[in-house]
Image (cartoon, rainbow, N blue to C red; front, side, top):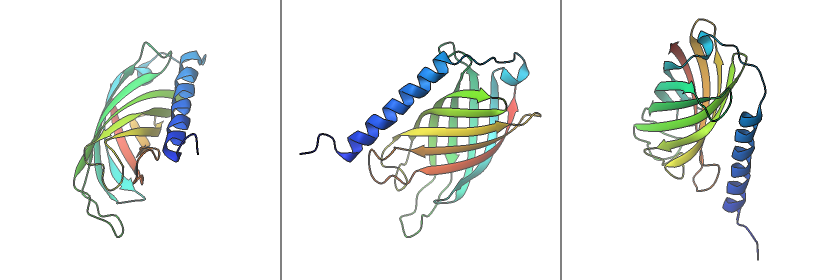
Amino acid sequence: MRLFNLNTKVTIIVLVFIVLFILGLIFANHARAEGPEFAPYAQFSAGSAVIRGQTPVLDFTVTQPTPILRGAYWQESLTLIGTSNPKGGQQAPNNFAIRGLFVDGFGHFDVGLGLAWVDNPQPYNGQHVNFNLQLAYRFVLGATLTYSHISDAGTKLPNLGRDIVLIGWRFH
């Protein structure tokens, strides 16, 4: 008799990773410059879902400092995902995701971890609530290149996930 099934093991590993990530943000002691690049901002982005079910994507994001995690930011996003047809699978209808992430920056790079609620999870995600990992590069003149992965980390099948690449513009 096994103590945990695969889904429980994956869930525990993901939760430990999240706790360690948040603790790292809380206790990080890196200096942040004050100035417009670290001020709250809104961002409009456009891009594509890639790897599985390529389709156009639009995104609106609002980012502001969080008082809980020193030097980190809280980011909320509404992401609109077009209709797609995965190889040999059912057609996925237009979709949207509401995302919330804790984001920390290292120079011009941002790393984010959070949750995403996906309106139509099938056929890419096994459930409505998913994890969201994000990497971004902030260019000097307000442009941003973002890679975002939305997946339920194998807690429920199918778990293909969505990979999104966006080019955006920040407004302070």
